[in-house]
Image (cartoon, rainbow, N blue to C red):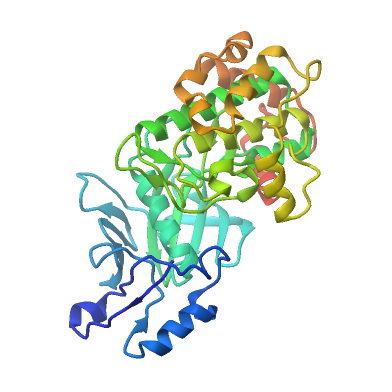
Length: 398
């Protein structure tokens, strides 16, 4: 959100674009730009000596700057040869555009694209390229880099580094050849309970790590849970994750994919780690049933009313195992305090029943399931490296 701030003519202020996050009562709930908001325009007419700066930074220290071929925000510095943090003793240097060769563009957005690339050492990577001048993406990309920089968890997508070039930032991420859970559902309609339990364990492991790091993901959905042929399941897209100052802190912002938002978030109430558990519960229901748990919702109003007024979409008896129903019930409690934490859910009877008790065993289960599938868009585990590469590109292109 943006706010009018006085212009400081000093050289430091000219070098850095500065603004404070805020919103008025009109453009905030309606997600309008202050430039197109009547109230904000009226305020500006009343105080003509103020200037609207379009960068959402909290302070001068956390503002964006471009100098000496570097893109800087707070402690994060991105150059044409890598990324570093001034508050860390290590960096991700030695990665530049000359080190990667683009194989194929596998995704596009209004201000970004993702390409399958091969590093000079032969490693396949997913390269996310974001236009840094796009205001809506600028904060997200820096938040994502900051979150990935310190991440060391087998259930979070791997980070190989980032570099800045010609007005854009490129992030090199681990390449997950089976795509996201959304793609898996498109190919196989639904996921059997034993496999889903193994997927769930790994996703919970990632959420548990984020909680330990005092971060709320805030955008758990099928598209942000990735799989590969080795059976690994990893969370991705930390561009809107929120770091809490303490373990009981609450967020108060409204970001993320609203179809999977918890009731407290839809109502703009403060929320915390439990909101990710609700989102994961909806994802599991979709994977088990093969369709979104609220299929009757056609509009935003329908969605809000259904989520807030209807009972949670727990499967009926006979349509799933009793253990899965109990697990889904633990996730889909409307009261956040009643939802079970990720670290407790890791030992749930449903997971134990299907042998989902460690990262290694879960990877074996998921890997075996992918290997058993013969659909055209699914990779054969025993294929040659060249065949595997071609199939990888096909899948990511989908």
